[in-house]
Length: 85
Image 1 (tube, one colour):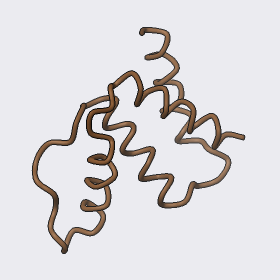
Image 2: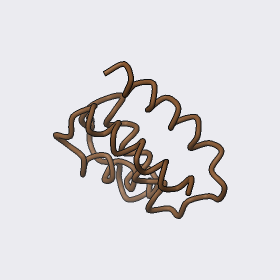
Image 3: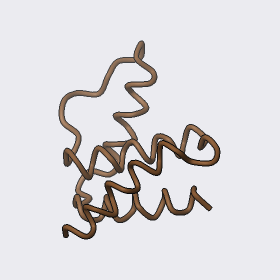
Image 4: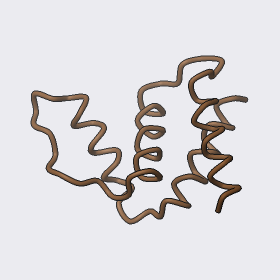
C-alpha cells in the first residue's frame, strides 16, 4: 500500500504540471478520485442550484460512492499517466 501511496502522491504533484489543462469533465474526475482516495465517500448534503461548481463536484464525488481508497488511488494514477502522454 505504501508503494501505491507514493505513486498517488507523485501523480498528485504531476497533475499540477500537465502539458495542457484537461477539460472540465476530466478535472471533475480527478477531483472526485482524489477526494474518494483521501476522504472516502462523500458526506453532507448536495449543494443547491446557486452553487453550480459545488454541485458538479459533489455529483462527481458521489458517483464514486463505495469505491475503495486503493481503487481510487489506482484510477487517479492511471488517469494522470494518460494525461501526461
